[in-house]
Length: 577
Image (cartoon, rainbow, N blue to C red; front, side, top):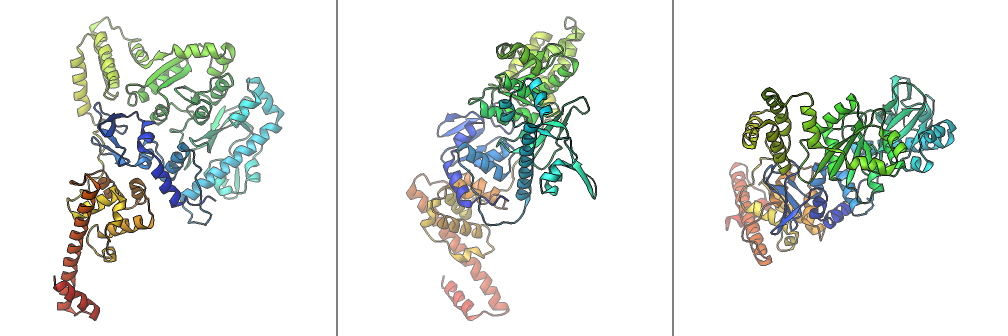
């Protein structure tokens, strides 16, 4: 069972990582003065209010209030938990995440690891079964697949047995939780997948998180997928995405197809950048995930009615996400063809020519809307405006949105100002369009406590400038115990960076307060000498405040019940002040 990640590794990783580099790989940044800017990835905006400070290693959006470290950005932007964010960041710096050997309390992380372990074991078993099944090998050969491509995508075969995994993996509880085994009654369970070609679904780190299984002979369902689990959410994951990122060094374009076999067949023919949605329409989360890695998505569907319906759903889910610099287009295949059959018939060059000529999102949208509307009549123009405006209203503020309104204006003969003005009024009145989500509303008082903590966060080296009394640890005065804890943490971990220091408080009640303090500057601290002077002054103010509060406590106790000898001595010392 996996152990805890050593704190020292987390500290070193966060100190090594450059937040500008981490964010710029996902959201293109432009330098402005001493900081970097972009339109916020967490809410729609036209004017950049998202700033990244290289000095503080911290990001902040003045529009919606989003803020945090590189780890916090990865957690929010890529929907990761803390450990997954650490592993993702480590992978980007080509570091292996160590684990402590000592046992630790079982928690959600341990349970997730059990699921990863049984699914990886299942994948190895299925791969070994494929090598032993002439029938399964013959089926893949008939589909034009080689042993090399089967190995790259870790294709396997689930034998036609009711308890193959149950008999070969000694963890029935994890098998059930992973969805690989179905329990029919208290004493009866069976394998979910039987007599199927198995396609392991991998997450961004290459861990097996689920399976898709295709039946070899005729039967229903043709494809069977793993159910959702703690580590698998089909609306977020994509089949073949990990393999595409591994195969293509600089991924710029992704093809979204409907089937697992389409992905593998395209790779077999040299087109190694295809992914498949997992049996459903391509979701917003999946599209957003792809646009974080590439700037162009080509949705590839059959040309029949079902294919066009799937394309329209993909278009609707793309509109709230697309922004300047991103492209989405649609490729409809000839009748009776799918990517698997067509690429085998035409080859790589011809198929990629089709991709290059795919219909842009803007053209597909207006073409689909005008297909059954006579826009030569005033009634038709009004109908088109009524259908188009709610769709255009979903697009984030951008030049692309302006151009889409311009195109609608040309089609219906109404000015862009009138179209977009009315649309914005509708958006404002609409319940479905929400303002930027509010972040924490807790206020930070402008006082010595705030200044001392903020300075210590910004400049951990100040911990050596003056001592923080141990008595601060036990007082009820707000912020005193936190300051003491910060001070002790820095002294016990020399060289700790500001962001690594902050991350040690993630998950605590104080974390949000510390984040707010890290993003704020303390006035009059432009150089090292000024920083030390302000910090010493703040600590001295806090010490005076503590002594005043302590005097009042002892004075009240003296009047009520009397003081011990030690307390009386302390009281006399305080009285001299």
